Image (cartoon, rainbow, N blue to C red):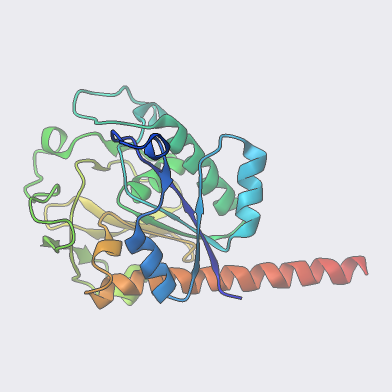
Length: 258
């Protein structure tokens, strides 16, 4: 069976001509395409704040990917929203943190992109700079790029001993659509890449490879850059390992009760 990839859906907060498009749950097509190319079975999951529903969702999947989107509610990392933080959607944030913690506990493969990386960091007790331009004086790269979002804008420097380096190499050229950044690193994580100006561009599990997360949007580059498709290939492969491990665990339980 193909590894089943859960994708917590984004929420359309823009004005909509059709009533059913208002606050509609959606998944960006480039994410779906990249997962399918990697051999995964993508499954969009609408938000819920019911813990039992979240647990049930997680039993359906082998991996979960956290997408980009609006800023994360600062109260979730013990800060007050400042004037530079943009639109936030608390229900989506709270739901995804529940999904992340359930995935972590159930040993599912985890992948994060842009906002998704920031959410993973928060889920493990880390926090964020709410605005790079006003809080990091040493930042000089245009992290909210003026170029189209499906074009690479700057390079990143990947640590040679990281899992990420084995997937994308040490100097991938990436796109950049964010104004916030990881500040304090969450527990159980390590930095695997930085931009030339020191902004954290990727994090991963300090032990093993359950978590891989990047600050850029590989879904918008995956069709044209092999390094970015490789991130999805690696994720689906990790999800397959999670799937096999779950089957072994279930088989062991069955034999003990037989």
